[in-house]
Image 1 (cartoon, rainbow, N blue to C red):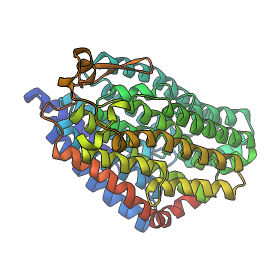
Image 2: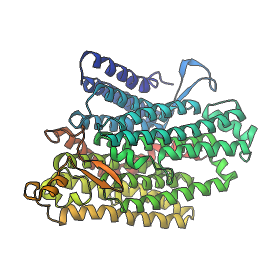
Image 3: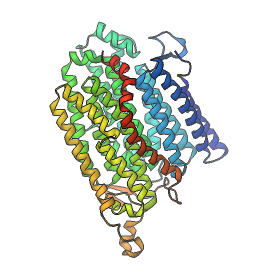
Image 4: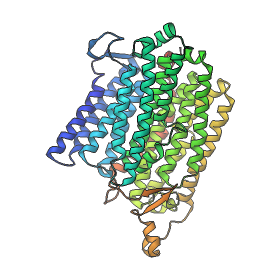
Length: 516
């Protein structure tokens, strides 16, 4: 037990309150408060992660009430990975937002509240408490998506709210069914009682599983329950796109893995092979559909959003295979996707701020206009494709190897096809950036062409208006901090690939425990 555990959630909540109070004294004073809170949380979770990796599992019961009646917080190899990822990514995007914006105190308050919700989801050992943190995360995310000045972001946030509420409600309904059958909400206690008192083939257990999984599928954005995601990612400010693409669905996918294997356990999947087959089918459809839809996009941020639908399908596939190799691959890909996709959204924001380019065709000749931006985007894109030795390759390799070991040949083919499709939609961007000439300057174009070429124009992409400029774009151009965050993401995308083997050794005890 460690008394430090609850402070991992308490520190960002306190920072959120202080950011709001600071706004009463001075406007746009939230960034220093958010920075101090983020640094404090990073130091705290780094120490907790070190203890979990070196000394083993850490538990804490809130209020000292005995389990299963108290709310238990648990940090093991997997949850330690998540809270460290949340803290690092949040601090990185915060550095980007210093100039990239938005810069209001309510924005930073919601930002820290989102961090608190994601951290709580990662370490809770109580099913209802996971729902509470799921709702906190959702409410903060809705606010952040709507933080742009344009109407498009408000509409996207409203759609996100409606669909996200359905997902959270389904999760709560599933938790309620589990509670009715067992009288407990502690995950490990639930697992014991579902197996011994209810039975894994009982209708109540199956209903609980179905509602919880579908609810989390919505939060993860698994096809066809992904419809909130493309607009939420594309319409929000660039810093928000980077944050939520890196963390929100990532932690929701972690919650899916945690609930399936801690509450229902592999024995449930063995007793209900149809459930496992449906998980694999949903993952395969999401991988192929997300990749195909990404190929069809003309707006860069929407293309990246549909790419996430495919990548999280790969994570679900690794989870559904119920093998150690595939599970390690799922977690490596979770971490890698957070770094790569968050970096890609921030790189897209960097390009948009510098050149006004927001569509695929706008990226023509980008290497001549913004060489550093083009190179960084290309590194992150090829990492997402899975070019060795990047982390994108390692995650896919482990999942594919797990599929081969399990005899899931159809899934193996899906992974290969998805890789080719991923190469297709990123290759067209790279080809435009490096092998085409830059368009003529706006001042030499016809008046109507100049208006389209400007960063403040609205373009139509897939039937939706795209606000070329927003409050998140600094008038004086990108800052050194914005560049530094994208460079760090590109470096990590390569470096984490080499570190994956050592990471496997750290999380292997936790993965073995989940699958036993």
